[in-house]
Image (cartoon, rainbow, N blue to C red):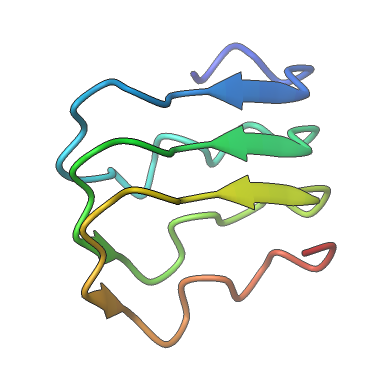
Length: 79
């Protein structure tokens, strides 16, 4: 998603994702909605949402999340 700096909403629901790469969202500085529901995510890594300062809505329902690392949401000021 590196060239999508103006993207405001991203729907990744129902994609059978089992993990997130911490670099996926780092250039999405205007993203305000991120939907990750209905996947197989089990861990949210530190700084997964680095530089997404305008994120207002984050949906993780229907995943298998067991671990949320302490700095996962460090830079998400609007949540």
